[in-house]
Every structure is written in structure tokens, then in C-alpha cells.
Image 1 (cartoon, rainbow, N blue to C red):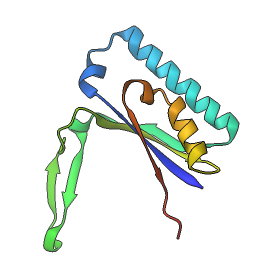
Image 2 (image 1 turned 90 degrees about the vertical axis):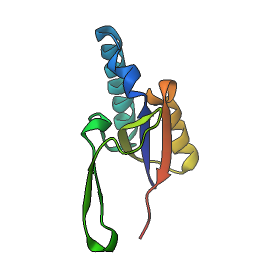
Image 3 (image 1 turned 90 degrees about the horizontal axis):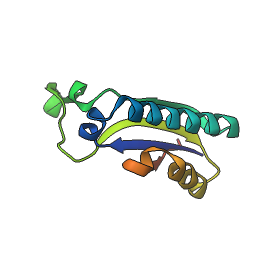
Image 4 (image 1 turned 120 degrees about the vertical axis):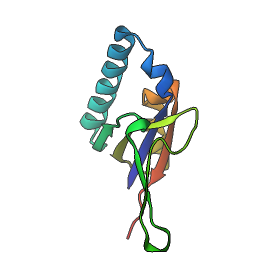
Length: 115
């Protein structure tokens, strides 16, 4: 079954991180992605640009309304995602717990819809 791991973190905290801290974060995510790839769990994934680059579209009554982000003000912002293949929710939970984002932020796990 496929699961989406949505990684949330505090953009303000990341913005003031030192070069060394940013390098350590990058290395941790690289190692995590490599471990998932070797285990056959990795399907896709990417980091996202800051929420200030977001654009939101709503189309009530068929009329498009475009809003520049960030739209939601919160302590943590969606920073990236992983699409993984996991045997079950417990397997997905184990991968989420190993995600570097779980140490400083939040990892939300959602199963993909099966049609």
C-alpha cells in the first residue's frame, strides 16, 4: 500500500539556521532517502519551497479566485513529502518515525486512495 508522508517544519527556525545546521539537515534527509530506497520503500519525494511561494486557487460557483501564499498561518508549514510503499500502517509509522522531520517538526501519514 502507498502512503504519503507529509513533512511539516517551522520555516522561521529554518531561515535562521547556520550553514552547518543546514548541511546537517540535508545530510540527514539524504541518508533517510537512501535507506528508504535500499529497502524498496521509496517511490517519490521532494522538498518544497517556502510557503511564501504558494498560490491558492478556489473556484466557488465556477469562478477562479487566486490567492498568493502563505494562506494558513501556523507554527509549522508543509516543507516536503515522501510517497512510500509500505506493507501496512505500522510499517509507514516506522518510516515516519525515522524521518528527520519528526525530530524538529511533524510528519503526517496518509494512505493513498485505492480506486
